[in-house]
Amino acid sequence: MLQRFEYAAPTDRAELLRLLAESAEYRAQAEYGARTEHGAMAKLLAGGTDLLVNIRAGVAKPSLVIDVKKVAGYAGISWSESEGLIIRPAVTINEILRDAAVSSRFPLLAECARDLASYQIRNRATVIGNVVNASPCSDMAPALLCLGARALVASSRGRREIPFSGFFTGVKKTALGSDEILEAIVVPASSAGARGAYRKLKRIAGHDLGIVGVALSRKDGLVKIGISSSAPTPILVEGLEEGDSVDKVAAAAREAISPISDVRCSKEYREFMVETFVKRLMREVA
Amino acid sequence: MKIRVMVNGGAYERDVEAHRTLLRFLREDLGLTGTKEGCGAGECGACTVFLNGKTVNSCMVLAVEADGAEVETIEGEAEDGRLSAIQAAFDRHHAIQCGYCTGGMVMSVRELLRKNPKPSIAQIKEGIEGNFCRCTGYQQIIEAVLDVSGQLTPANKGELKYA
Image 1 (cartoon, chains in turn yellow, red):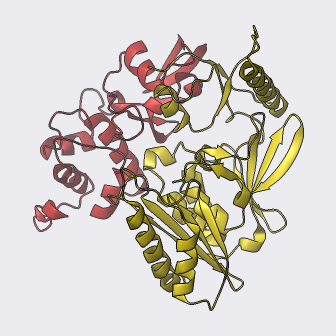
Image 2: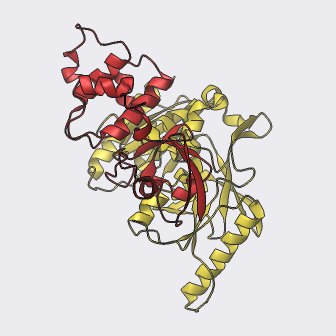
Image 3: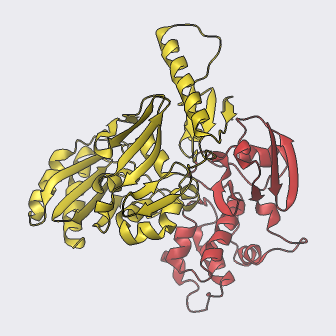
């Protein structure tokens, strides 16, 4: 049974931003100890595959759930040489897997998407939901970090851009303000054609959370590595070049991570497997 | 909130509270109890139904999100009291023991065969990766899918044991 909340499904972007601004104001006043008669603590709903589980578990306690899927302009993926790949809030993981521009120009995005949860969840879960949830084990983040993607963020105050390399600020924390929504992910056209692959260590071949995940991409003489489940946030390892030795690249990845021991495996095993995956990917991604 | 939903071809209009899941709506408001709740967190797939032609975990969808949508459940699988080909194959191969996972499992198999009429064993496993079975065992379920897709031969029957 879920706790009670109100539901809004605005079709108008301005209405969505207004609801978010109101909720942010209410939240700020509540934190300050002020008693307000009216107002709501809002949470945004896209696929619901994290939010509804969190509400059920009592981790999230919104009094208002704002469904973003009906907002005009929030559906679909588009590609152009001038703007790059644009992924909007209602785009599901399976839409990424069916998209021709993704499979031909950004195969690393599709590789990461393929490893996310189960088929039913991929039908519902969204790319933007996966990154704003900011789990250290996010499957989409390693690809987006490697590909130099940016977050286009909006609020009633205006718009701004955040590169994903500065988006994740802690476990389940992002640079988004409480009145802001991530309206689009932009993967730059300059990353199109990057060669890459993703390796995710799991207990079983099917639906499972990652123990560690490593994405590696190569383009224009640069090597980039995106790593999940090995630090408080997904991380990007940059400054590596084509021609660097496998050992040097593996050591850079090892240096960048700060894994913990938990129920899924030990810190030492995570360190070992990140290095192992990096070494394998350096050979496999030619 | 008032919602209108097509379920297994029939139109329903009901008042639902915002926090009601599609799963509870189907089971408690419409009495369609073939769709089960296992984990309530998207792990087990016992609550799998079709929402606008796509399989989803109905425990993680709000009933209000299904307003205007088409839903198909296990109750729509048999026609005029006759088992569908998938159900008949599950029956022949004893791919049902307690039956709790079966409704969701059949939904995922239907979706798999729609996309891929002749799936390999690896593709069958991937197609049902979001559906847990904890008593029948996957061997019989995989054999039933091979059979209904015309791929079960005396040669590969039983070879799946450790596949």
